[in-house]
Image 1 (cartoon, helix red, strand yellow):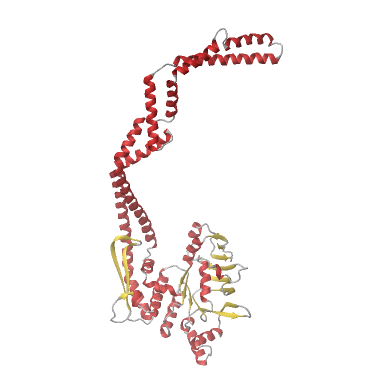
Image 2: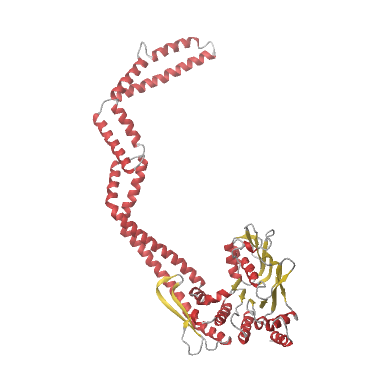
Length: 551
C-alpha cells in the first residue's frame, strides 16, 4: 500500500507531503483545486511519460516520491528478475528536469520506464473517469472475466503459442511463394548448375591455366631465350660459371691475408653455387619446352569456357563462380525437396493448432465457470446501489478462428429496468448507471486480486443521495481488504472515509499554489457541511455532516 507521497515543483504544487493509512481514504476539494494534478504526479511514479511543461519552476527539478509497504504482496521474484534491491518499504522516485531529462529510481537503483510500469501494475490501480466508459470495450470485458477466472498464466501461454503459430503460417506462405518461383526457374537453374558443375572449377585453376597457355603459346621464344641463357652461363670458354671459377681461384690465393679477403672468397663461392643451381633449372626448363598443339588448344578451350562463364554470371573470379554454383544448388534442391519441406511445415502447423485449441478450451472452460457467480454478485451489488431490477447477461461463444486471447467471442448486455430488453452495455446504461456498474465490477475484482491500492477518480459521477451513500458503504467495505482512495464531490462518500484529505488552492501576490491537508474534526465537519450546503454553512448542514460522520 501507498504509505507516503511527496510532490515537489509539479504544476501548481510547490511542495506537498502526505502520509496515507490503510482502509478507505477520501480526497475532496473544489473543481480546479488540483486533484487531477495529484493523480498526474502519481501516474509519473507508475511509469507514465513525463510532460516537461508541467514543471512549476524550470530552474529546479521536479521530484515525485512514494513509499510503499509491499511486505504482503510476494514481489521478491519481481525484484530479483529486475535486479533490484527488495525492501519491505520500497521507495519509488521520479526526477524530471526542464531540459528534457527524466530519471526513475526504485530503492535508489535507476530503472527504465518499462520496469517502473511493470512494478506499478502490482501496486496501484488508478480508475479514471474515462475508464468507466471502457465497460463497453470488449478488451476490458475480457480483462475482468479473465482476472476473476485467474486466466493470466493461461493467456500468456496461449499468446506465446499464437505467436509461434502465426510465424509458421507466415513461413508456409513464404515457402509456397518461393516454391512457385523456384518451379518457374527450375529448368533454367538446373541448366546453369550443370554447366558450372561440368566445368569442374577449382580455386587457382584460372591462374594455372593462364600460365600454361602462355608457355605453350610461346615455345619458340622460350627455347631461344633459355638456350641463350644456358650457353652464357655454362659455355667452357666464355660462360659465367667458368669466369667465376677463375675469380674464385684468384681470391683463394689471397684469402688468408685478411678476414676481408676471406669473406670475399666465400661470397664468390656462394655465387658460384647459386649460379650453378640456376643453370640446372634453365637446363631442365629447356628440356621441358616442346610444342604441343593439342594441349594448347585444350588449355585455350578451358580458359574460354571460364571467361564465358564469368561473363554470363558477372563474376570476377573462380571463387565467385563457385559461390553462384552453391546458390544454384540450393535453389534446385529447394525445388526438388519442395513437397517434403511443405509437408513438414504443415505438420508443425497442425501440431501447433492442436496445442492452441487445447489452451483455448481451457480458457473457455474457466470463463464459462465464473460467469454465473460473477453475474449474481454484480446484480446483488447493483441492487444495493439502487438498481434492483438491473440484469446482466454475458454471452460467451466459441469461435473456430484463433483470436488474440482465445477462441471466444464475449459480449456484455444490460437490462437496466424491469421488463427491459437486453442491450449492449455501452448503449444500455446512462453515466450514473455506468459508474455504479463499474463500482460493482471493481468491488468484485478487489476481492479476487491481491492489489494493494486502488484509486477512484470521481467514481460517483452521475449519482447522489441514497445511491451515493450506498457507494460509500461499498468503498468502505473494499477498504477492509485493501487501501482504497476516492476523489469525490459527494459528502455521502467523503464521510465514509477512515481518513479525509482536502486539496485547495492558495493565492499569494504573484502565484497560485495547490496544497493538501488532512482534515480532523471539526475541520472535517465544516468541509462536509460546505459540500452539502455551499460556502454559507448552516447549522442544519453541520448537523447533517456530523450525522454522515457518525454512520
